[in-house]
Every structure is written in C-alpha cells, then in structure tokens.
Image (cartoon, rainbow, N blue to C red):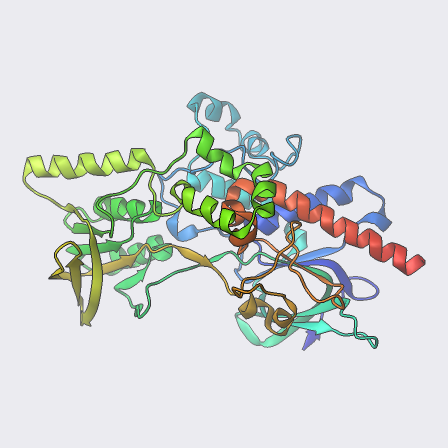
Length: 445
C-alpha cells in the first residue's frame, strides 16, 4: 500500500471523489480563489476520477444532438461572468466565437459542450488524479472521539493490487448518475443501456452484424434520440419505440416553468415543507423527466408519416405498451410487448433491445463505505443535507461530506442538472472556506 502525502502533515483541505462537470466546477472555483489570496489562505485540494481521462456521457455524444440548457449555464458564468473558464472564453480560444454568434443559438452541440468541459478540465489537470477508483473511505478518529478527517483509499483499475491513501478534512462526492435498468434485465451484446449507444453501434458495424429490427424502451429525450439515431444508422432496419404513454411528450421549457431552475428557487425549495416540495417536483417533472424537445418529436413524426406515404414503415411507435418478457436465443431476441389498453401480447423478433430508461444517483454507501454510517438520514431513509450541500452528521464528526447530486429531495430538480452547477460550486467553495477559517482560528486560539 502506498500513502501519498499532500503537504507536511499529509492532509488535504478538500478531496473530491468523481470529476464530472460538478466537481470540475468546484475545482475551478477553488483554483480562482487560491489565485486571489496569499498562501496561508489557500485550500489544498485533490480530485479523484476512475476514468482514464475526462468524459461526460460519451456514449450519447451524437453528432447532431444539442444541449437542452443555455450555454450561459456553463461551469462559471452564473457564479462569475468575468471568469476566463466560461464557454465564451473556450470559443474565443478555439477560434469560433464569431462563428458561434452568427449561429444565433443558445444551445450548442453536445459534442462542442463536451469539448468545452474537456478544455476546462485540462486547465486544472494538476488537481486531478485519473484512473483512481475509490474503494473505501475510513473515518479518522482522534483520542477524544472526534472525527476530524477521512482516509480515502483508491486503486488504479488497471493495477488492482496497488492502493493509495489520501487524508482529507472535507470530502465532496460527485460521482454522477448511473444507468437505470428495469428489474430483472439481463445485459448482453444485444441488450444494453443507451449510455453505451455509440460504442455498441460501432462494434456492431465493425463486426458486420446485421440489424433487421431494434427496439428502444423509454419515452424521454435519450430514448427519442436513440430511436432516431438507430433509424438513420441502420437504413434497412425497423426501429420500434416502446413507450407506456400514447406518444412522446414535449418538454416544458417555457420561461415561467424554467424559473424552477433559478438559483433562488433552491432557497425556496429547501425551506418548503415536505408536502410542498413533493408538489413542486410533481408539477415540474415535465421540465426534465420523460419529455422530449418538440423539434425532435416533430422530426420523428414527419419521418413516420413520410414512410407511411411511401409504403415502407421502418419507424414505429408502440404506444401505451410495455415489455413483459425478453428471451435471447443465439443471435436473436424474442421480446414480448403488451398493449396496455387491451392486455394483448405480441412477440417481436429483434436483433437489439436498447433500454433508454434513465439514470439514478449512485448509492452514497457504495462510495463512502464505513464513512456512510456517519451520514444522518430522515424518516424515509433519505440523506439529510444542509443548504450548503453538506451531509448532516453527528456532532463529533467535524470533517465534512459535501454532496453534488442525489439531493433532489432537499434542493429540488437542479440537484442532478447542469443548470445550478456554477452557483452550487460557489456555495460549496464558500462553505469550505468558512470551515477552513474556523479550523485556523481554533488552532491558534
């Protein structure tokens, strides 16, 4: 076992677990703070990421897919419009600023926004250890019972016998979302989640595997994009979209509804009674869950109608339907689809079944191990999280655990979305600085 020391006492001020957009935004906020203050006021930090390099939903970086949030909701602008880590600064650095302005859009291509994230990540590369998978987090207990720090144990996925221990006074967990699959799903070369869309399709094409029929389960943006992509990529295949609703539902991106993503809406949501919180989530699910951009809906419908006119229907929507059974027999699937209004079952022979069934926050217990036992939970077994995104712990735990994501029940719909990333990073930075100041005063006082 190798212990990596970060400073004379071997302790980081902040250790980030995961390095997607959320912790990237925090790294930038802390880097900018450190650049403005003398050495004693700087926070010493490190971020760990199990991937070998920066990557954000790479399996769905379709060449024509656009962002669903404005480019102004980037890593920094809503926190500090003057930051040189903004999307506009990226465009300037890339030589495309004028071209983008002429494009007259608030919604860049998804591949371009990923390039922006990678550009920002490279600028803070010295703060990140890639290929570091966290395997346990152990509380550090002093003689008086106080827990002032955590030991974070990680390993290189390519060298599982070697581990590294880093000690930190505060943690910020931002491990992102994991693909959600229906219970009982058996993943195979022909059954997978849409998060793997691009590499899976590339492998099929390289191997020359014929695709005559593909099924896509799901009714959200990713499901519609997946159906469209498969339809375009396999010109001889029938693509069946299986959705429980009667048709795709447009996303509500109207100005008033979008105010649920405003920074001050987090304060409103956080202070509301539990019943009101649930009502707000229910009212505004149409801004994010199981909804599709209207332009894509209309494009898919035009395609279906054109094929009907031409007499060759390759794109089908199996509405008000659910998949009841999947049997895999060699190089084919037998998928039983139930039409819900009548209960009628139809068995479709298919080559592919893609589950575009969304994502869910990773279980913090899986990430934190023993340290997760210190996290307090409410009567519904949900994490108790403060307004500053710090997980509530017993009084003897003075080390902090901050959480980015998995806080929809406390902070609202923005918890797992890009909309609040910049502001949230600034709030967590401020909380970390306040804790740093308290510790410094205690040490001298």
